[in-house]
Length: 105
Image (tube, rainbow, N blue to C red; front, side, top):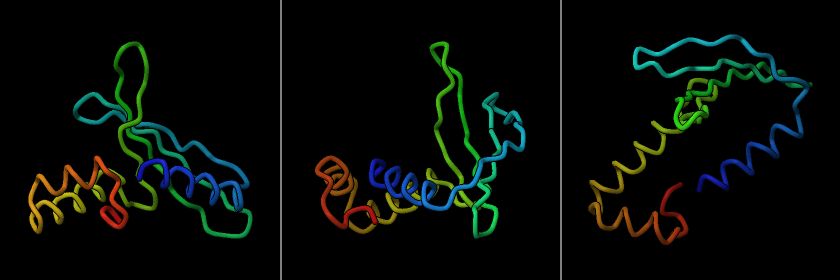
């Protein structure tokens, strides 16, 4: 699902992207970093995009992307929780491992 999301976002951005403007950064209380950017569309509203990063093994790594206030991690967490409550943890693990169509929409 992550690859599908990346492909959709890449396509969407390449169709309407004029430029990306960096808005700064801030440290979280855990020492991680949040990079704030805005996507300036040619014919549309400004889209805020924040990247949450952590520093490990001499590299910064992205662990969450928030677009227009919607966190990718929180979105997945909510979906996973719904499936786990309805069908059980084993069913959730199987759906993630097999990539069952419609499993994680």
